[in-house]
Image 1 (tube, helix red, strand yellow):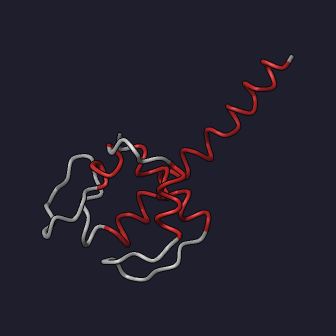
Image 2 (cartoon, helix red, strand yellow):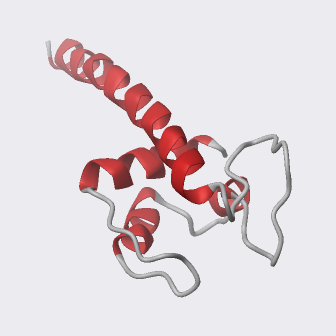
Image 3 (cartoon, helix red, strand yellow):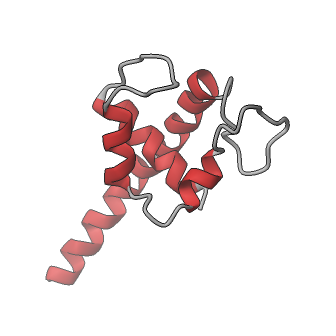
Length: 99
């Protein structure tokens, strides 16, 4: 019974995770693409040594928590923008999907 309940919870969370991923891609294309390469196979390059999203995702220390923390605080070279918890979760899901 517990296994079945755990499986149901996991299946119910899949659409939300897929939705986060798609929403995160939209956010990345809208807000981040001017400076970062946000796609796995980019159509164009960026300058000034700005890390790509796939490179960020591939770093050994990159976790959902570390990305959320970074996106929750001010960025030194990035515009000052406020993301809601849902937007942060979506962006984190998208970045981690690029591994």
